[in-house]
Length: 289
Image (cartoon, rainbow, N blue to C red; front, side, top):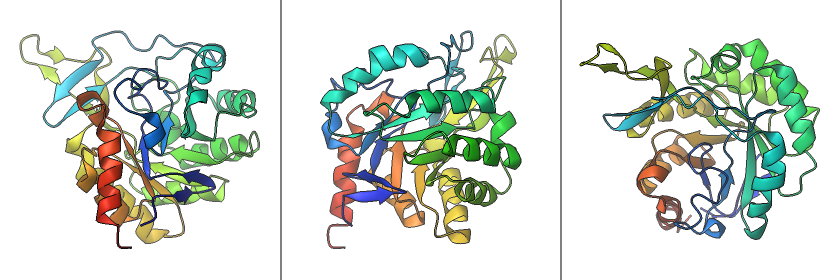
């Protein structure tokens, strides 16, 4: 397998991307991992205005994973452009800007205002966050809304466009096909699964938001199944596989299931240098192909 790959129209030096929300805007993880050695970084979600996110507690450890209900807390569009994006200028790696919004119009405005930023190589549109009250699954679980967002954002930029899909739908392949037909270059599959945890002492939910997004090794078989569903029904669609990848073997599973690239998320909190190790492992596994 050639480490230099193309997902949609985006060229990557290797198939390993750092997932949105797990490495901030790059500077948080750069002291532990050389960003030049990974395929790319997906920025923390950006919204038009700054978001404080959900009140704490908003992270809970689970068996083989974690629940998060951060609520897309971020610095907002203006500070991202002036304070966060310039830091990534020094690195030779793809920068994929993840955009989150409460309305279709907000997705479009954010994309339009970021489209001319040279350091942004592609966009990942988050239509599937399970722990925000507006947008989130309201959009991500509605095929017509996903298509509408994709069509309108596509008109706002000529750069590669990826749609991050929710796994909390019965027919994810239909959503992938709808997004690509509407103008997406590829799909990111999948976002976190809806989960909850109860505190036995208080007898109340551990998360202030009640439910959150389940990530980590616990969801890997479920995520692989979603990637398989898309690739088997629509082998022409480029997929970025996401969900519980902890090592190179996990990443290879996603590639064998039909993903062209992968994103690693929760493992970044446990082993910040995992991205390089995973890229090396993939290279070794496919070295004769």
